[in-house]
Image (tube, rainbow, N blue to C red; front, side, top):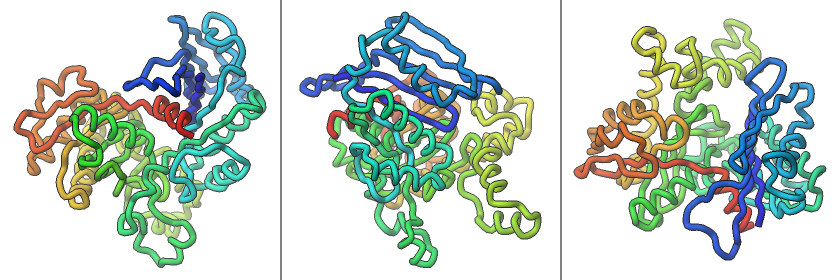
Length: 400
């Protein structure tokens, strides 16, 4: 079965094709037949399409005024040129879409219907950077492959098991009845790495207590007990929680009231500041990319401050998850920063040594993907796991 996965962001589109037999699903992920990304941030005038297949790599520039047809241009590389892997796009039997916000309506993946599309559109105000891009992809596939089943796999679905005491904000209850609650995000990743952790530790997921840290440009921390999400750092939107690349994470809400009343900031201005100008970028003044922050630590006091705040807030949020678990079997690091920054893992674990975490510095300093990097006498495992959201989405498509 050929499954196309579309993983859309606010400024990028990542896509791949897997060939999976529903009767012989591999125990581990397999390499995609075809992989493509569109990055709209490389230039003010155009985006860059990169395609890999058949051990070939192709790059194509796409003017930004042609963005509406970019997905069609990307899919054309599946059946033409050096990256051809299919004779016809109709060989694709399922298209899976990562959808960031599904609200409270969806606790699992589902076939995309007009009703599902309406829900995704209705939730655009809660995920303005992502849900419009998801709809763009869904509509493009509807035109190109009108008879192909499309599946929505929601980032919020895994967090539907969060209990009321962690889900409901201490506001007048009427707001919860209106849908204001903790939804949580990165659920596809958190669920995937939890299942991988079970395999690495060789213990049933139903018997494990985990804290999973998805650390990329966006960051979230989740407490997983017996295979279910019971708390997570992101909330009503992906803005809440730990410090991120350009997002502030949790702050005193009265700061916003102060900026409105004293300095006449508008809601759109504040939204831009909180989501695009804060976090590592806002404090350092250098970059939202942690790699750039780390490279400037020795020479730039603001870069050092940004890094210190980042670590402090990560430690604080991880520690806040411990009481609801009642014991920790493993701390998991994943995503771009979590998988690749030995310094972040070292600093985070150092601040949690009071609960018995002991990091093996030698293991941590190596390429340590899908392995335990804790010392033998650590109170729990410390795992680095490569998250594979696209593979997880493909598997959901098989089940739906």
